[in-house]
Length: 398
Ligand code: FEO
Image (cartoon, rainbow, N blue to C red):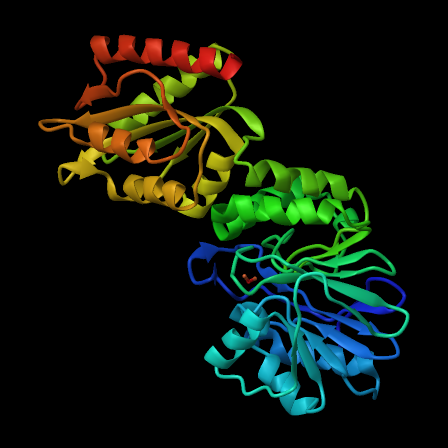
């Protein structure tokens, strides 16, 4: 049975939700599932914008068949070839053999690489336009947001931006297609941030390029490939994307992350959190051993400051903390201020290594010297932490 929603008079959402998938890209937990969005435009020509993941293909095909209501599918616009959207291309080609594919030249190459034998391909370049009847579209290249073949398609008649992965979010839609049908700032923003920072976060300059192009368009709808469609208060979400892609924090405060084996480093983290709270500073405390790194990354993008505490393990940084540090550098997180505390009973080597790793983040300031805790806090390390709390608080309030 079909399950579709109308976006505008001539445009239908024909995507589907997957709540059975545990790990997005087989790495990021998605306890609220995900949607794979796809859209059909009914005009003089019929047009499908992107396909969907193989896991939801049956629902997706039912939806298209219902919306087309016996009509042929004339065009399929492929904005993004990653398999969570491109996997069902071949099934569309089998059912609608006369369909013409519109995509970037790079997407056509990827189509072949993924094993799809499509012949009817029209490749398009930056700024090219096409008319499907009363609806016209312009193609805007968006390379490395977050793959090289990506483009977005702007429908000029009603101001609809088919934005590929940009402006997406983790989370199944549960029937609520539009962002104004949910309390986005309460229920969705954390998943949207975690989606952006982990999937697209590395490519801030490329997102900035796209935002500059988008600023010249009269956008009234944003139709992303995951998560809700935007038709009201677009500025709220565009502003988030602007901040995230400039690596500017949303919140002044200290994210405290600790890696502890027997509770002594955890105690130091709690002491630091208490000291900061006494100084009126907003804090968020995480045990890196039981928090998936995708959540840590999202919070690291959100907060202006960070305190990292790690026990020494095999003469180095505790593995989960090391992974977090490497992930932050890989995703180009920058412009942060960091305090560091290491613990060790006989060779506390985690400190210098954390300092080196944090130093790889561009424009990142290390606040104070690394504090070394020898097995457990004592008067000396407690006093050093008072100074670190003072200096972190001063930096937050600067
Ligand atoms: Fe949702 Fe980059 O694919």
